Image (cartoon, rainbow, N blue to C red; front, side):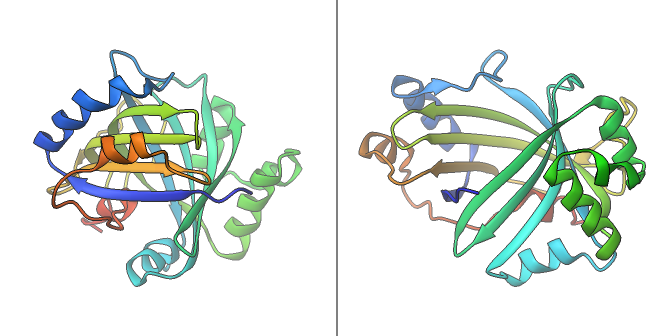
Length: 223
């Protein structure tokens, strides 16, 4: 598991327009983009005692979150992901799921995971059994993403964060989400061993500082 550097900044729509004028000159659009952006829907997991949420609020140094994610509502490409944080660095492990598998997990049908042949599925099963990890809420947002090969840099601009509150119907088109409070636009910059100066300059905005914004935390504001 390779850990990466990550910066997050809360920005506004004027900042977003500045970045969208700069970034295409030095970076390529992410391959998921349709018309320059794409929709992300994630189903986040937590324990009955909200372990993932509490650790984020308390700033626990080593923590992890599980989620299932799809893009642009397309069920042909669904991934199970575990995002880990350690000493300010982040890492992500993932494996593909079929539409049926994702639905079974959303329905809390977990016994098949242990024999799936995928280590991440087996780990999810273990934590569903030992910690009571369960689907908690849907998180929706719109993303604009850019990539740069040197340093394996990825820059994303996320907006319109919406919460499913207590809904967990990841693949149900009737699952509605609502605005997650007064959520800001979020700039994220991720890289491996070094951040090229040309990218550092492109993402630098006056009076913006690194923050610890969590979309999952934001989407739990109603409970």
